[in-house]
Image (cartoon, rainbow over all chains, first blue to last red; front, side):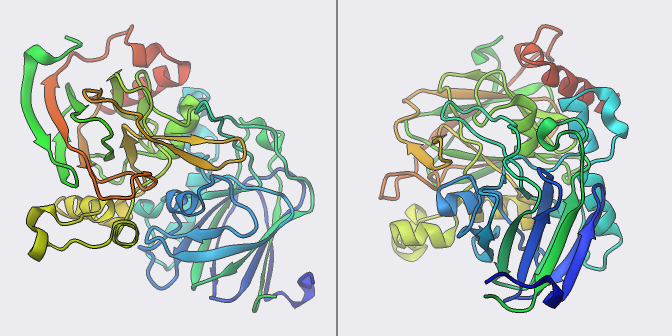
Length: 210
Length: 240
């Protein structure tokens, strides 16, 4: 049975280039909807009661022995504890190795002159500065890129491939502890993964699971 | 002096299961040699002057379109600068993906061996080794996002699954890291988290530090790709 958006306790549309920080209680269900298709949603999770505990890409991929996240994946913390579990996924798989773009990494990847362009880590720092949780740059660990496709080959190459998401695809997860979700709706204009067109996403939270 | 042997400043062996930390100065290089074969060396890299700048796994992979590390690759910080470059490597594949084991996973896999009964052969784990060394520099778990696993190989199959390849590193294999900044290096010689050996058998390595020339215009790491040329420019500008 689908959750009904009219019963959601949070229903927010986040424009590209904007951050969002929100507390999700244990047992609540969180859904991210890719409204227009192939939009990268760069996401951190922190233990809301002790932010030194945070989402860890390496613990998560070693825990399930697979680099792609999808339905059934427990999202593990840097203490190797489940923070949330993905309960539904109409996209198929999500990336956790591609990281979040920054003005500095853009100078390396594209051109020194690209420093002025808006980037996820600018959004993360802005959200941290203006929120009451005491988060700083040291808390920028590893993140999930929902709806992004970053295949790794058996020969050890990493590629940015065309997206496998499309308008209306969504991913849903149930919180296993009280978490802070910190999201940057990615503003990247240099990468074909979003067809050079960053678009809004919809964020919903429901009380309780299915 | 690419073999570095005539200018060794310091040589030290590191037992299996131990931790080590040192501020590797710009203009020096650290060679790590797998003495017996089958070693794993977990490694953290932070800018010693501004530790909030540290090794960033995704930035390193994305800039170089790679999911493994070997000679010619650079280890990027989150600030678009190069902390260390890999100037020599006789092993061929080092794992950047799999992080490290912790007290619970080590106890679950190998059981427990405490100091009272086993003295310095007690079982240690990478996470505590890292955290103890970081604490000596006033740093905490917030400063521990990513580590490299030198000498270990994990292949990502087409479906995304991870396969640990045993026997990746032969006796005498070495890797050399040239410091491009003043880098706090933390090393750990516990086993890889996916090591297929069911027993606790961490392997020793030999560390040696020697002086090296700054990377010139034709440096293989600099010219290996356009991204690295820009990474070196960013790094050199930091010292202006």
